[in-house]
Amino acid sequence: MAVDWIKMRVDLQTHPKVVRIMSALNADKCPQDVRDRSDRLRVIGGLHAVWSLFDAHTEDGKLDGYTFEIMDATLGWPGFSAAMASVGWLEQDGETLVAPEFEEHNGKTAKRRAMESQRKSEARKVSAF
Image (cartoon, rainbow, N blue to C red; front, side, top):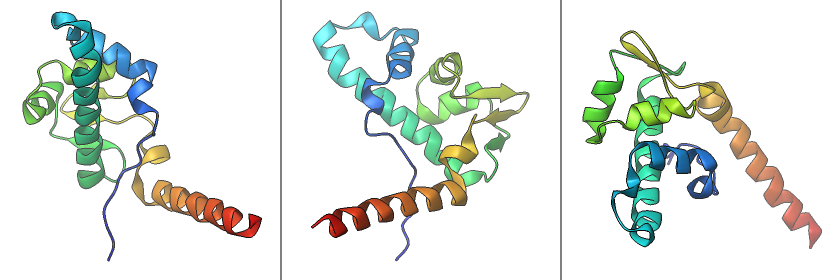
């Protein structure tokens, strides 16, 4: 059974762009220890939702009919799209949202490359024993 999936980095929660998105969204309205745990994971969840939407509804990284405002309403998080844009992870072109470097991370070819890389890595582990 084939399962839909998107590629996400294992170190995404510590990525400097995630920290910048947190700052852009005024995540500092709560105590530092709470912000570090909950808002960072909330940003990761928002990124997953946006990237999943692109994966489900576009093949070229251009999502027609969406604007920052519509995406923010979809997520229930005002300002999230602008925060993504501020780090280069989202662009708006009129009534279209664009995911920069979409083909590198999404789509059939990116998924095929990721699966082949995983398969080769597993084969190297087996042959090492």
